[in-house]
Figure 1: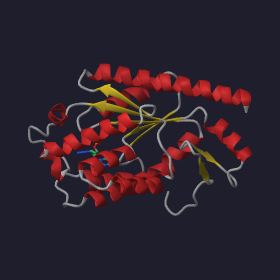
Figure 2: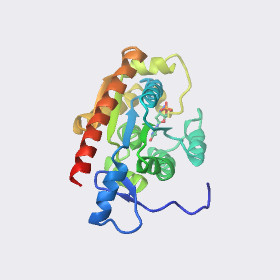
Figure 3: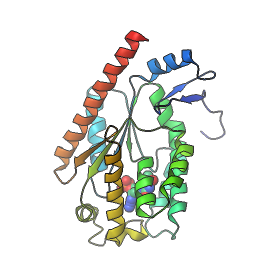
Length: 258
Ligand code: ATM
């Protein structure tokens, strides 16, 4: 894994999709990219602590596979050897105190590796990538939560992801109290955040998520996470399936005209 040559260069298109490329992105190459990337979809599940993202992600992956799709599940931080090592550092309870900016840089280092090694290649071969968290978590936690300026985080995101944005972000929304109770934090459970017991921090994170969703309603969908795990999972599967159908329809139109 380490020290080997990178695979073929990848071209990041304006819409954030990526394709393999031998040379510069020309008009001809653009057509090839569209055909190559058309079946893939980049889905991110987001939400505050205790929203039930991970369970919904597992159900989504199972449902998509049962429907015959190739799916690449991943999570942040993690998903690569260095990402999992950083996860240990970042999420271990009782770690040394550090700034929001240091956190943002560490999460971003794991993300850069994940994008390059896993997400881009998967999208290029037409897989459906289901990621439990993405750059949107950094905006919510380190930006809205810890107060790192959002314009700095935007710059960092561009560097880290090369502009790769999800096709769809599903926010599983729960009130802070309910989320913390589920995580056991309210009852004294462990979490890595110094601010874990600071309700205000989690309120800011939740507000941040809702602000991002409101600002980009085409890309974001919000699901009420206070219901049963099965209800939430059913909604998430329905949202992704309908987006997939729309993407497929667009792709076949491109195929007919391209
Ligand atoms: P989960 O594995 O439960 O998703 O938790 C990951 C934690 O890392 C979560 N918070 N807690 N406690 C959110 C946090 N996180 C960030 O603060 N910034 C990030 O960029 C990412 C990916 C996660």
